[in-house]
Length: 573
Image (spheres, rainbow, N blue to C red):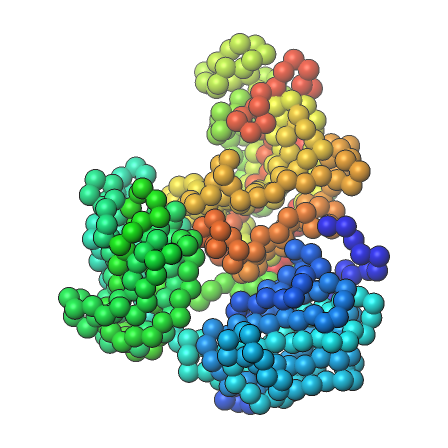
């Protein structure tokens, strides 16, 4: 995105100060009986300055992300609490673009609004506003800006109490027994049993059988262990989803009562507010969205009662400011191999029809100038087999290169991950800085472990970079990602550039030289492509491939040896 004409970035020190100021809000708490209702809920706005500063950033609990509006009056941001609530307090953390006049409003339907507090002398900063009102929706309506810019909030927090689905409503279905009309277990979906829909593992799923399950009706139900009051159901569909289905409850798994019904199911992720009582909860599909059967990555039931198992504690988001937890500056004498306490060699032939053999660090060393050098060479390896090399016409592997990873040395869940790299130029060259889910090392196959590509460059087109996510529902050529270039169409191969990934529980932001080039919003990903599978440890990988499906083959003009230079790698949490 093009920068504004005024500076909007925040230094680490400034963010630390902001975090401290936000922490001071604890000194002005909501009433003891009230809870934070807005965090992680659906937020919408009259406008957003750009895709980076969307309304979800104001309710994500991260004081380093923000919503920012267009430059005009009036503007608004609202949050859907998911159920009617009694609202007691609103806390605002303004960015420099604040409101001098605004109203706090509530609504039962998102259309008719009641003003519960009106401010005409706003001074920005951190504001704690006591209110008294009820509603499912809470809105800040800005009517007068303090600057020529728009309205911008680091945080929009709503406190109160609710008896509907929310903080008092727990997950009841985790690791409870599941039953289904049929189940699939073959090379396309191994052990896709009903239990997989209730395991809180977004990379495993239930599916109806290929030989007898691609029919209507198809169903799956969970035994909650005891009678429960059901308030919410979350369905994360595979593309094999239901167009028409009912959610049903039962006390005996024989006689069912429908508590929700649709004839226009959209697939992907559905979060449904419901009300019903029973020990068993069933999805009963009567019409499929595709020629295939029914399949769910996740079937989550929330409410009170039942006999719930305690779900695992989610990983913590990065600290603010983040703390350095891993670094390698490669400041060693020329010819030094990678630090064995941080990196391990990953030798062997490559995937994706690549043409190189990765050696046991024969192709990797430091240069004495503060850089790690990964060198690809035109060098035959007798006794190996690769796809036919178009230059030599041989099937014996004609190239060697290097690949290292931190697999058994270091991994991380979330954080700021970055490296400063200079890439080589030439047909068939494929430098990359990426991450793999650590469970790959204990036997979970790709792409079920997850892959995060922070940087990929094709040597034949070094004015373009790629950052991509891979998961069971989107991988390979269908991965979820974006491409980007440098200002003025500059060539990545001409100099060092810093690739950064900012990763937390709500999404990923990719940056090059401090400029955001692609963002992944978890909620949008789940609503449009499939499950988010990035809430577990991943390890780092650096490599320089030769050939393969993505970059294409080298030719007689490809320069060898070709060198990928790495100035540093750092991870903050």
